[in-house]
Image (cartoon, rainbow, N blue to C red):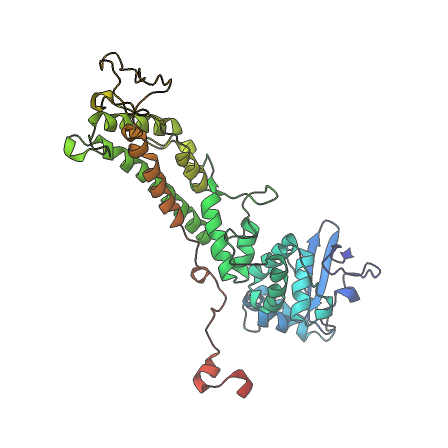
Length: 410
């Protein structure tokens, strides 16, 4: 049974009025009326069929050139050569497994110059399916003028931070169609947001807008680099935690961290105890828990930033005898007023001078958050040039470069 590609509201559809036998495709599926190959796409309703020109396909696709090209040694090339020698001129039938017939139809119409049948707009999922076809058969450059148009309609600002589109599908689209800025921003966002599986600390879990997980098409080299950057960033944050604690572990007055003029050793001890307890409760000290290490970089930054230091810390031994409110002597013995209430002005709040509050000057939270933020801000996205198969910007045709001419002068 032969069928046409399934109907899609935005993608071009094949006519369903004409059904033909296996000997020939329907007229609506003809990309080239003299085409020497019929591509068959198995579906749950039968085979979608496209009559195409093998030479055209081989020009735009190194994969097809290796498979059915003139100098190919694959069995498909030999079979195609046999059909060309046959006087009946029956096209050679080549079955392609696991391809989206609508996406393939779009690409085939572009390379066979049927531009009037190419959709002017694609949504994210449709563009993703086209990217899968172009990546599989290495045909991205052949459709670049169209993908520029489709992407521009979906992404208003490819340099936006955070990106206006998110998820692994867009990372794959930006990779396949060489969108450098978008790829850089999306990979950076995934370094921020990716988590890892509880069963495998190296298996990235990146969730798309629809809640789906990571797809199988993004190259392992890209996923590996994102995983490495994520891991390094988290380890750097955990190192910050240890450095913050170690500062207060050092014995001796010469290394006291207390910012008060009195350099209270008890202040350092209090801060040390606070850090050890708070960071232990957060699961990041002395060794970060596996639960924490599976979280995203952004989540861990939030965990470390969600600590509250006591708002009032006073040490009575070094306080003067004047009230912090009325500036007059307490009028009582120090032993009587150890609770810090002024007997002169009758205040019901502790009468400690604000300048004696160690919380204002000795809290470790600000410096820790500053160091964590510096690490977070240093995270950058990946460079597409490291991974892309498409010719890089600035490269020119060899003949043009040798002759020193522009294309208009040839």
